[in-house]
Amino acid sequence: MSTLLEDKVIIVTGSGRGVGECIAHYCAEKGAKVVVNDLGKDEQGNSTADGVVAAIKENGGEAIVSKDNIADWSGAEKLIQAAMDTWGKVDGIVNNAGILRDRIFHKMSEEEWDQVINVNLKGCFNTARVAAPYLKEQGSGSIVHMTSSSGLVGNFGQSNYSASKMGVVGLSKSIALDMQRFGVRSNCIAPFAMTPMVMNGIPKETEEEKARWKIIERMEPRKVAPLVAALLSDSASHITGQIFGARANEVYFFSQPRPVRTAHIGDADGISAEAIVERVFPMFKDDFYDLDRSMDVFTWDPV
Image (cartoon, rainbow, N blue to C red):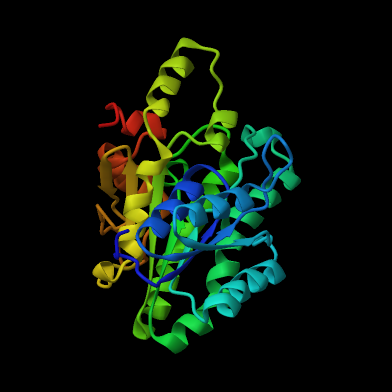
């Protein structure tokens, strides 16, 4: 067993299956004590979290189950307390839990919006915020949040999911800034992987959709886990406030919004809307971004 995460206590939300399950297993293999958090059940009605914990223990690792709902503050409190009661500390949190409620924007309901925001964004805040005093007191800790290219780039029918995942980016950066002086780090990963959530959310009707599916099948969820473990390790103690991507055997580093052009116009009376229309927009138009989707940006097959 590797010692990269030896004796670290790592909480992984949404780790009953998919990417989260792979992260939980990988962290355990690297020596971490893992809290497997998930509400899900398999086809037979059994807890997926129970199954992951049993498998980790069978492989010689240490793990406990949490079936707390991190979308609720009280659920996040119970989750963090479970780690504290069992091992007396929390070294890392992987905010992986997420849901989809895809719908074209003009048909999306308030309920579909709230469900996704509550799990994907508020859940990340809840776990990180509840753990913050413990991390501050011990003077260390690493939080890894899962964002998505749906937010970073764009996608059809996912305004709730995209907004939640871009919100996670802003949350992560704020945590990194506020907690840096206490030795606490916060980073984001955009995972590209075939998971049950993705399988249920992508149609396979048109030739374009079928071609996209063939690419997705090659992106194994287990290949996201190494980047997560690396960011949780002490070897990444100098890395915070960043955005990465994991896609098969590729690791990406994403840019962050910064000014790329500027225009100084106006006179003694100040700037006018007419001057912006006539001069600024034409100056900027060659740098405007197209309405790309993730598949338009990542045009090459996974390595």
